[in-house]
Amino acid sequence: MEANRIQEIYEILEEEIVQLKILPGEILSENTLCKRFDVSRTPVRSVLQRLQQNGFVQILPHKGTIVTPICLHVASQWIYQRLAVESMVLRDFLRICSPTDIARIRYVHTLLQKSERTLYEDPAHFSVNDFLAVDLSMHRIWFQVTDKLYLWDNLTRPQADYSRFIRLDVVGGRNVPDVMCEHEQLIRIIEEKDEEGIEPLLERHLYGGVRRMGGQLFSEELQDYFVPAKAVEVM
Image (cartoon, rainbow, N blue to C red; front, side, top):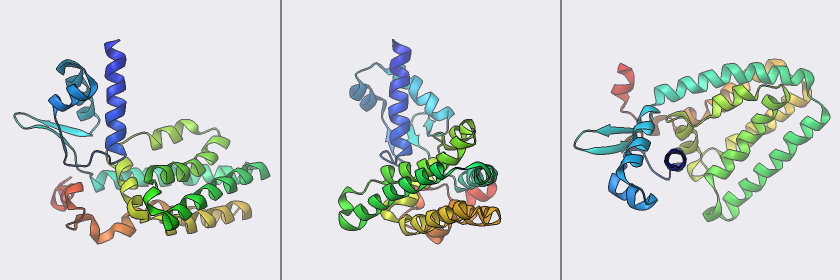
């Protein structure tokens, strides 16, 4: 039973860190977590140690547990990996996709359009995580049709740097106009079976967060969320 409880607490905290409900630099108090989850220190410490192993927190002796900053260097490598794999998968998809598959993609795009309308008509109810989930569900289709879901699950599993970086890009609807435009272009490429257009568009799409946030990454607004630039260079 304790193992199940530890897993449950871990998943809750991991999700909250990934979804930026717990921000980089925040301190996780053992006492607060014990009261929140009504458990002793032993399971809480097990959870924090596992979070540290996966890069989500750093346990500092005599100081406490701090949520790690996002390392852009690592996030960029995840983007590079996803671009390489997804370009090949999408190329395979173009060769075998059916009208039904394309209809599924268009349906997901209508869900994104609905979320986009919420951003402009009722921004208080716009959900970063809902928008991202729908966005990713479109990409998942070509992995599913080509029987490559194992790759998809690995590319999109919770990861301390990339998972938080792509959510930060959505905050305030920052990436919505670009995502909508690029998804429309993706649909065109699929319908026209334009293999040559895949990699240039996916590169623009997947590296969009780096382009959009650009110089803001280490601005006063965001600098506390990221590993300092000098530290990144050393890595």
